[in-house]
Amino acid sequence: MRTVTVVGASLAGLYAARALRAQGFDGRLVIIGDEPHAPYDRPPLSKDFLTGSADEAALALTDDEERADLSAEWILGVRARGLDARGRTVLLDDGRTVTTDGLVIATGASARGLPADGLAGVHTLRTLDDARRLRQDLTRGPSRVVVIGGGFIGAETASSCAALGHRVTVVEAAPLPLVPQLGREMAAVCAGLHRRGGVDLVTGTGVTALRGTAAVTGVELADGRTLPADVVIVGIGVIPNTAWLAGSTLALHDGVLCDDGCVTALAQVVAVGDVARVGGVRAEHWTSATEQPRVAVANLLAGRTVETSRPVPYFWSDQYGARLQFAGRRREGDRVRVVEGDVAEGVTEDGFLALYERDGRTTAALSVNRPRPFMRARRELARETTQTTHTTETRETTAAS
Image (cartoon, rainbow, N blue to C red; front, side, top):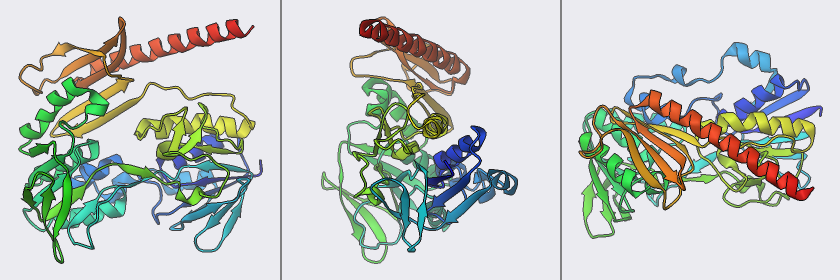
């Protein structure tokens, strides 16, 4: 390969560029990003950056020295609008084209919004520019803030707004937030963090409309209530950025479909990060964006799948002074056992460690403010997963022979 193009100047895109150079690619490297900014860290946007304890310089993932070492052509502030059927030419919205031998798709995802009719004070939080606008609104004085969506972004943003002295309400359509990730029992325990942080939690009802003329004044709920609001933050999930790939030969379904090695139906095209559906799963986590690129690049340079990406899923979230950490693959019916701490009275400052179990085997671990025990549990999960995968592959090889 003489030219490799990375579409997406994201965390995953940057890690892919690093992996290309680390694995010996010395050809032309092009990095395309729709934002005008060099790659930056997104997790602090809902936390330290929003509260003002971190500035934009602290978000930077690269510096001038590293960018020089990468020896890449950076095309920033320009959106990819198409890919030819063979996956060899990227079309840009400014009329330019980039011809390439290999392609890494790292275009991430965009925040879902709600119809707002141009009302001021309504925000999503996904990009640096989103965070700038929201922070500006929050610095105008105490406000009534309504966060729509009780997922991790919603909870973290609500926590930051409460820390800034705003009156905050979180609205979650489901009976409890975070049930898909944590299961009902642990979701109920962690929901108490909102109350501990002085935030009102409204569950079991959706949002039907945003009220206001020039600026938002309220949030109308499906149960007939209206919550007064000066600032509204919509955190109801994301949409993978695949629209630009319509018309290409790549298979798309809630992301770019890839095998277990991040390789698409075209061997010269791989996908990583939030946009990639790897082995049937699309994982919107920092660890996926940093771990997948090494495997994807190895396969891209080999021209076929020679490695697979099967890490134990892991994510964390900082809310109301507590750190939640989760690793593993929880399924409905798993038994939850609290092995450290006590959740009888909800989440305390000391936190807890809980294990999810199925058929006598640990499938996942959740901790709040118990980082060391959690890391031990995570390492054990990784060992069990490796052993299970090795046993399964051995049986399949034996059966095939």
